[in-house]
Length: 291
Image (cartoon, rainbow, N blue to C red; front, side, top):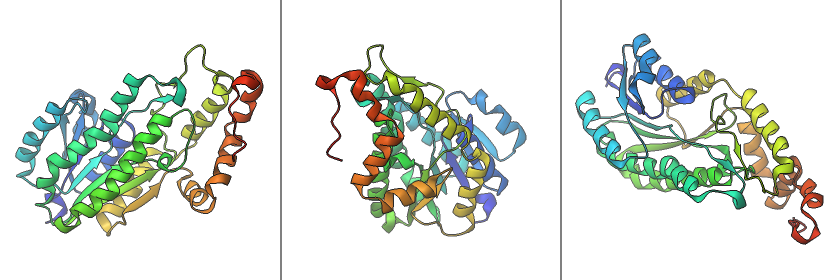
């Protein structure tokens, strides 16, 4: 197959990382099937790139995923070279403050929809000489960034699912590649940090916001991130994991080299959790002496 015969299905292309991934694949001659809830949000992509096609997809609706397969079969003739599970949602809240309905919605998009997409498109990937499932993950699968425990858990679940899937589809000639993402400039934090009015964590909310928003603002540009990933995918055999994005390699080293006990001490101090002891009182304080 030539590059012109190659097809990449990418979810969540209306902005940010997904949009730049679509551009990066298209610039390398791959025909991109770009998805979004509203196809009109993809008009800029399709108007500037003749090999990008807009498809509708609502990840929270299983029937939408099923309908997508029928469209992709018609567009590609029945084969797919790259399934890029990029679309995701973010929910930032402390573990004891979480709204469970929001957690369920988070896992529906970040985990369950991905599982369904992999199932649905496996038969098309098998028709490619080098079928790829590309999972856009996060360093938070390993690093317990506070104020987003549910999001971290969804990325950890995605990672372990991908590791198992990698073994299961290897006999079929399909590669599963997890992109372990650090800070990338995007709008992922547009929902802000959730906390009820009586949350005991309100005194450190400003500190967490500063860390998160500064990290996002100083992160790798989305187009640079996307170009680096796509280069690795299309020009040479990629490894099972690609660590990319701002601070990704540093965080990888920290996780690999620091014992869990020291990692917890480092993060406890980084997020100023010790300052909560005075505000919540001795009777309700969170005891971390076990570190």
